[in-house]
Structure formats: C-alpha cells, structure tokens
Length: 86
Image (cartoon, rainbow, N blue to C red; front, side, top):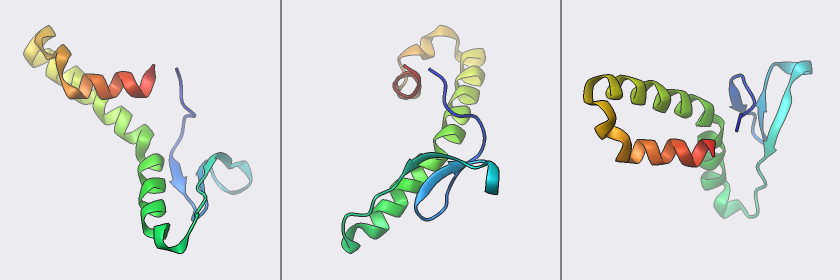
C-alpha cells in the first residue's frame, strides 16, 4: 500500500499535499459541532503528520534491527507500521 507522496498539511479544512494550484486534497476534516473544534484540529494535525511518522518508524526499525536483530519483530512499532501499510 502506498500513500500520496509529499508533505501533508492541514489548511484549516483539508489535509493537502503540494502548493497552491498544484495542491491535491487527501481528505476533508468535517467539524460536527463547535465543542469538537479543538479535537478535530488535533486529529487533522495527526493525520497530516502520518507520512512523517511512518518515515520515522521505518528509520527507527532499520536502526533497531541493526542493533537488536530479528528479536525486535514483536515490538509495538512493528505492529503500528503493519497497521499503516497493510
């Protein structure tokens, strides 16, 4: 499974990748009620950070496997990676 490459950003309504005219919408964050505005914004920022978090996990796994070998396979970081990529 592959995600849209590039830096994802939250523009106040949508998660987008790209700049201005070349922007591609990844998803739209719908606010249901004012009381959830802060939570909606936090969720949007987390979604926008997903590609960077995935990259950080991949890097960390690579480095830890070099140190610990295959015994690292049952780590929560491995399960998170699988959830994000399968």
